[in-house]
Image (cartoon, rainbow, N blue to C red):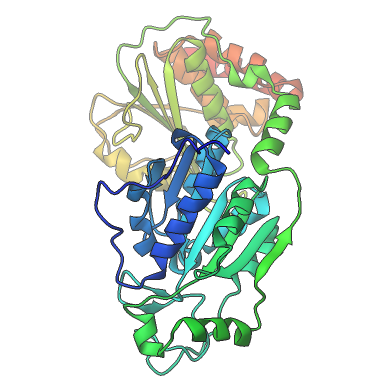
Length: 443
């Protein structure tokens, strides 16, 4: 038999592993090294994603790629890596603490069946931060936060992930002779695989609970939890299913490809705010206005503000237009403010009072506004909308704004309506654009 190309996937450049004497993490990592030696992947084709906690110290001691992130979030990083680079072998090292803190990520990784391997170094407590109890701490166990014994039920990680949809799950002990082989099976499995490995924290858990290797085996039996491979089935992994769906999905090219066909004369970033009420189609009109800007060769951003209620309360859209990239999207003082209802006025009254003389304020003729230094124009937007269509007030106001200024051409707004709307809605908004121009000429 020929000699393996890679004799080890661990490095001693940093010295010995940094764990307490007797810590179970050391054996888990050495068994993972044995598994990789058997599998013989190229080190650059493997990513070890580590969680916060003592086990999170491990990735630096491997010659593979590594990613270290926030507590409980390692599965999210691993999912992103696998989706972006499906050819990679992605292995997650997490403690029982991370499983609790990132519980929803654990459930969803199993449910989605992402092709990653999760190795849980389960020592029943938060070893890095002083031995607090975790979601897997057995009943009656003493920890820094349960000095009289744990009264919570220990979570069965395997049963939890299997219930969520995991296609491969294993429970064993860090002392098991076949642990490396089980890791090989988990890494080879085409889908989400989890190994719940019970081991000892010699710094905190073992001294408080007078536990040793033999008693750890007895604890498994008394827990009622099964050991061994507890799930082994096959269904398409998430990244494969996602790519298959994407390959056959019908995409509306007109919504993702906007080719500028018109010009503009805008020299700087300009902020436009539309303030009205829910049900006035403020946001959809703002989107069409932003699209008109893009069709004119500008960059555009849109931010919307509205309450949680439906069809009641304010609706405000902030739009930035700029000839270059927009790095700051907040509008602290708008260049143009369109106020179309009492709800919009209430939300922007403070703004109106602070607007400088360089700003333009366009207000529905039926509204009474507070004192302002801004240039004010009142036009009968609401009454015009009652003639065109009750949902057209924002489009009428935007068309009036364009007819008054040189922000964009009215033609750009007409083009956005015809290209990105259809049927009766497009017909109403086409009429609204014309009505807005008329109002401005008459005003």
